[in-house]
Amino acid sequence: MASYQLKLKERRITDRKRLTGLLPGRFQINGKDVAVKPVDLSIHGLGLIIEAEFSAGTIASLMIGDRSIPLEIQWGEPDFGKHDMWRYGLVCTDQNIDLENEFSAHGCLKTK
Image (tube, rainbow, N blue to C red; front, side):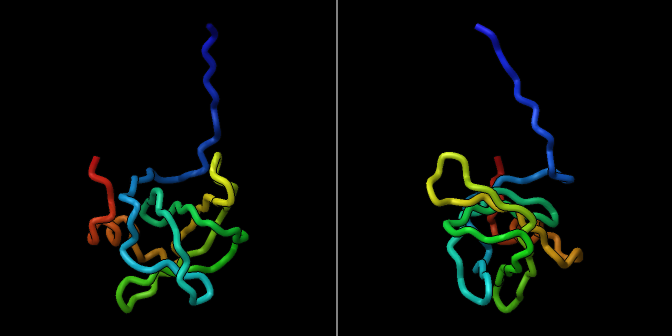
């Protein structure tokens, strides 16, 4: 039996960390809470699954206490095998914020 390996171009610049499935706060788009499933993150990027379609450039925020972390959707595509779910890549628009530190401080990073 033949074995095939599919090579895909990696779009990520930095390593990603796996998440517990919890956010350290509320995710909002246009000031409204949106239910999401967090997947992975890097220092300035966040991967989410959402049951709604948004376009690249959509502005979002992660509300942690009284702080608002600004995010922007960079890309989105249907989540493979999940009906009506979308996978998104977001970037933190404030480069002074380290998302890994934010999620780690709230116990949202998987340790293994």
